[in-house]
Image (cartoon, rainbow, N blue to C red; front, side, top):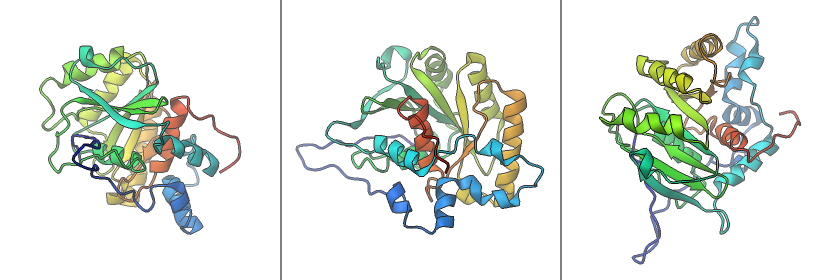
Length: 283
């Protein structure tokens, strides 16, 4: 689902409405699961491995495979503290309105109703002051929304493209992607049930044209049959290998409902923003 992402601050009228963390939002909570379920939650591709042909090199889907220690270290970035504030910063519709921030930046973009805001809510679920609203109406996000995660990095929620996209979507998004000097990675979301659509291919073409590093993230895997998801992953891998030059070779898969892959994605964000050097211990 696509939606406007909002932050409620404490006010004189009383405390803010707090979001409650999902029971599997943190690695420590997830560690109570059985070994098999924990592996499937943290590394969701593991649930698909048994269905792969032996001729398929599974290593290509495990290029980024941090261990539990790395996942826990990355998670700390998403937990606020008195010295580490996770805050909504501002919204912008044009480059001149964008905040001048020196810290690394990542942005999330995708088709309307791809589940972008639901995923951002899951990523920030350990920050109780950040409330991410999810609307059933596609195209609710109309601006670029900036969230600062301490001094570590900034996350930018982009308007969705496609149905009910802002009329000035191109004027809003292209200058940001092309000119934002501190943008280190763009996360391009793909609906697991729909696969790469024509508008997704246009977004890929835009990233390639501007030469910016990006990664494909498959959403809503809880709604997608395993066979269809595996077929999509194989298609995406071949697509990335044969038709892209700046896309990370491994597509990520996530469920914002079950939290599958959310911990891994947090870790990848921490890594690409320079906040986490991976240890070499095996997973």
